[in-house]
Length: 260
Image (cartoon, rainbow, N blue to C red):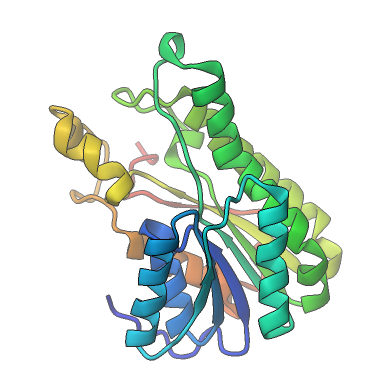
């Protein structure tokens, strides 16, 4: 990974949820390399610790609060409190942590599929933003980066994503509201809408569902799968002062898949 990001976040304090893997790990490492003081959070203490070790290896130490269940208000409050105790402020909130269950409408279990996905994709963003809000207001120049999805904009035929579409569509709409509520405090709120990114979470369908990888590639203009760092660079821009006039926006980083 090219982490030469020239101190673009120097002096900033960032919380990155889901820091143990995938997009969250990429954002945490990139933000640390860009000069931010990063506090990670993940339900998996082992993978969160691995991210901390990678940050130390690149010469930009960070620490993580883990295990941290982002669906539990007390856990989220502890995360915020730990950040403020250690760094005294909070300037950037990256809500990369999420969980989603995938099933067709008629096969979706209401509790373990539907409700758990809405908690894992929507409630986790609400709780983190709510608990962080007083400190983001105090920052004077704060940024929230949330993650919607290409599925918030269009259906993808091979993917049984009824709950995922609802959750990420909710994140998209909620972020616009956050931008409006934050306008008087210089809190910017934006979303990134990735298409399918190759991570440990997506490896199973990519490797085990016949034709799935080909279907994904057929939907993109750039004929490769997305990587976590593709999203990390977009998040870095939205978190930086370079995006000081960008709020309430959605940035598609999807290889062109929603453009046709």
